[in-house]
Length: 534
Image (cartoon, rainbow, N blue to C red; front, side, top):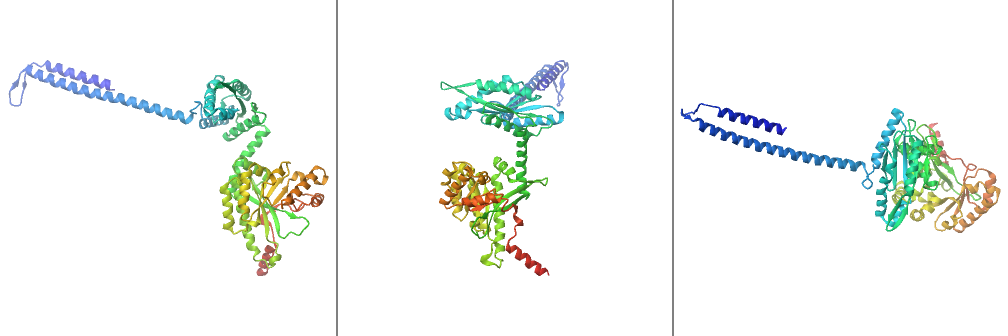
C-alpha cells in the first residue's frame, strides 16, 4: 500500500513541474510588479523538489515502521504458536500430552456416537523403567524416554496419535481402526520396545511394555469409561506377568466390573452429600458370663439413586481403591458419635438407674487410609469433645491387612486414641500364620477371628486348632476374642468350648437400622407419652 502511495506522489510532483515549465508568461505579484519566467520557474522547481523530499522521507519512514510491525507481529505469532504447542505437548518427548490426548479421545468418542465410527485406545506402561531411573539416575531415564518416539513413530500412520501421559506411561489413539488392526500395531510396538537397548555408561539396559487395548464404538463411547477400561486392561497385562498385551472388548466381564466400580465411585460422594448412607447395627453378644450393657458393630449401607440398597462389600473396596475411604469413615464416625450422644441423654431419664442396660458400646470399622491420616485422627479426638461422648464406649476395628500394611501408622493411631479411652479390635485375624508375629506389636483389646475359620470349626481339624491357638495368644495379651459369622448353634457351642469370649452372626442378631434399636429408656419414654395422651 505504501509503495502505491509513493508512486502516486511522484507522478503528481513531476506533472506539476512540467506545467510550471510550460508557462510562457510572467506572474503578477500583489504589488503590481511582474516576476520573470526564469525566476518563477526556478522558485517553483525548488519548492517542488523540497516537497518531493519531504514526501519521500515521510513515506520511507512510514514504510520502515510497517516493516518493523511485520517483524514484531511475526515474533508475536511465533511466540503464541510456541505457547500453544507447549500447552498440548510433552517437552521431553515432543509427543502429545495427557490433556491433548484426552481431547482427541473425546473427539473420537463423539465421532463414534454420531457417525457409528470405530476407534481404538491403547495404554502403554514401560516395564523395568523405574529400575533404570533408580540405578542410573533421571538423566538416563529422560534419555530413554526421549528416544522412544523415533523408535515407535515409523510403525504408526499420520492419523494415529502417540502421547506421553505420565512418567513412564504412553497412550495411543488409532482412529478408524478395529481391534484386529490395533492388535497388530501394539504387538509391533511391544516388539520394538523389547528389542530396544539403552546404552548408558558402557552398559546396555532392557525394558518391556505392558499394553492394554480397548475399543471406542457407538455402544462404548464415554470418555472416562474408555480411559478407565484402558487402565484396567494395562493392569491386567501387568498382573499376567508384564510385557504382555491385554485386549478388552466391551462385553468382557472384567470390563463390566470396572465400569460398575467407576459408577459406584462417582455415586458414593453424592450419597454422602445427599444423606443416602445408612448405619445398621449387629449385636456382639457375650458367651457364658452376663455382660452388662450391649455391644453393636456398626455397618454402613448405601441407598442408590434407583432405590436399591448396596451392601458394604460392594462399595467399601471401591472407596478404598478410589481414595474415598476417609470421607466414608468420617461420615460413619460423625453419625455414630451423634447417635451415642442422643443415647446418653435418654439414659439419664431411665428410672432403672444402675440396672439400666441402655448404655452400650459400638464398634466402628476404619480403613487403612484413615488410620494413616493424621488430620482425621485429630478430627476424631475433637468430635469426642464436641459431642461429649465417653471414648470408652467406642471400639475401632482395623483389619489385620490394613494394620500390617500400615504398621507404624496403626500403632501411632491406636496409641493416641487409647490415651483418651478408646479401644481397638483387630478384625479378620488368623487369615495367615504370620498374624501371630504382628499381634504382639499391636496393643489391641479385642481379636476378631476370621470368618473363614469360624464357619468350619464344628468340623474340627486345622481350623479348630487355629482358633484354640488364637484364644490362647489373646488371653496371654489380656485381649478378648470375638467370633463372627456364627450362624448355627453347633458353631456357637464349639466356640464356647474353645474359650471364645463373644460371638456375632445371624444366629445372635441380624443387622437392623441403627435408628430402629429400642432400649428400656425408649420404651419408658413411649409409655409416658401414651399416658399423657390418654
